[in-house]
Image (cartoon, rainbow, N blue to C red; front, side):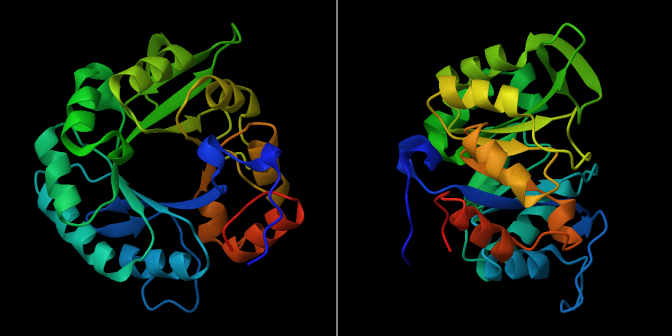
Length: 265
């Protein structure tokens, strides 16, 4: 594998840039439309995850949006199945609010966990998890929105609740508490397919010592190039463009390599 590696395209620690599909899970099934012919059951996150891994995804993110008491059991069983079928790192998020929650998921094979609202409401959770399991397991997800004053603010509860905290301030605090990675979703860009939020992604990437995963707005291959080169992101996450095969991961990575961006092929 001959990669042309330029310093400008390398992320934290000189690693290759990562492409990460995201799957929303409800009651153990994939939600949001998925359009794959050669897959037995497009609602099965294990099948879909394995397909993405085969296509060259670097990692996967599974976000559980189930709101039931049975959630923890369903999720840990699913994680166990995924870990037996998938050979790339995967992150699990959704409703995680304690050391016990994380312990169950990691024991069942998850590589990392993602926390969002629970960490904002109880920042010490980040510290507790980092001490118990290591920072490399702790991904802080931030949903952020640019308001009329030009500042990016943190939103909670899946983007429903606005806070008065600025995105960068929360991200910086989270790094100090032990977060190992930040999954940054721009609510302004999410679903638009008009490109990632380059300004806030760049601000975090250039000023924080941990990897930043950009999310929200990816619609063309050029958008991924832009978020790596201009936004300085370490990884880019997307959902529907992969689910609906608007962009296939192996083609995207070939394009990025042609653009002198270091990727794993």
